[in-house]
Amino acid sequence: MLQVIRYLQGYLTIKVWGFSPERFMNLCSNHHLFLWDIVNCGDYYRMNISLKNFYRIKGLTRKTGTRVVITGRYGLPFLSVRMWKRRIFIAGLLGSLAFWVWMSGFIWAVEIEGNYFVTTDVFQDFLEENGIRTGMKKKEIDIENLEKSIREQFDIVTWTSARIDGTRLYIQVRENDLIRIEEKSDQKGNLEEGMGTDLAAPKDGVVVSIVTRSGVPLVSAGMEVKKGDILVEGGVPIYNDDGTVKRYDFCVADADIMLQCVYSLTEEIKEKHEEKQYTGKEKKRFFVIFGTKKISMPTLGKSFETYDMIEEKKQLRIFKNYYFPVYIGRDLVREYKIEEKIYTKEQVKELFEEKIKKFIETLQEKGVQIVEKNVTIKRVSGVFKMNADFLAVEKTGISQKTRIIQMEDPAIEEDSALEDEVYAGEAQKTDGT
Image (tube, rainbow, N blue to C red):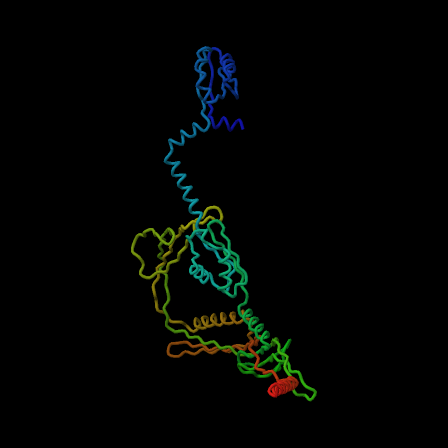
């Protein structure tokens, strides 16, 4: 605490020498002038004294025949003097600090994580429509309403979390299979209405195998089915003693049905085509983006007639999550010439094989197994045409509202007839009275 007080008041380091420096120190003590950190350096003494007491030692130096020289100045009074000399720099520093504090009250980056089915561009458009954008004030963002709006807008999003981290708005989402959600929702609604759901064939094919968990199967392995045919009914019949159907117990039809079907792919490639031939000439154009304004550095020489441009940019930030609305980067401009070329048969075959490979990968991602493929390639009027048929096996069956109509219960009809007779009798009795 004493050191803090000395710093606030200011103190000096002095060098004392002459006729009797020891007497000088004794007189300072007698006049309550406090000295500390006294060091005997042989020919002189070095010590510290407060700034206030330094102005009171002039008479004591005359009495003792000593000389005093200041070797160091410390404390707030001296710091303020140095700061005043650099007042323009200090003002700029304080202004810069105030600017960054003011900037920290805005959102300068929006990051979305966990989305797959809903693309980032779609999310950004949604946020823009709801007034969430870079450059807005943090206090204008209602986190709770934002999370609720995302869940309401995108049915596939089952969970969302949003938080402000520095100058970044960080949004996390989790998605579910939209088709499954809709199917379960429809099935639930049908059961609540007292109706079941059937499994129907979405395309033509041959049933390879069927394992039924609920419902009544109408097909078996080896049977050929058409699009729209019912594979499993969602109504289980309850029979009378005479073998007639008394009523139906409705359920959600559920089964593992493997269907053998055919997928077709048709592609065309022109024999003559244009290709980009890069000349090897490149230009680098550096730029800075402030908000939405892009400032590019000029480049020397003529601009290319035809070129590709690759943009690389990076948003400035300090620490981990303190982003600024400033981007720096460069545009890589590559010149090319257009040349007309003719595909060879080998090149056409490679291109078609690449298309087939991508098509098969797409099917396999959906759980489709390719059993056999048949590919034909023809050249007609300078155009190569490919027709490919794929024999495949896949899990099938789409849910739909059952077509079964509930049977009328004879017992219920008899009860209704008796009730009608009772009402009729009561009506006659009332008229008679």
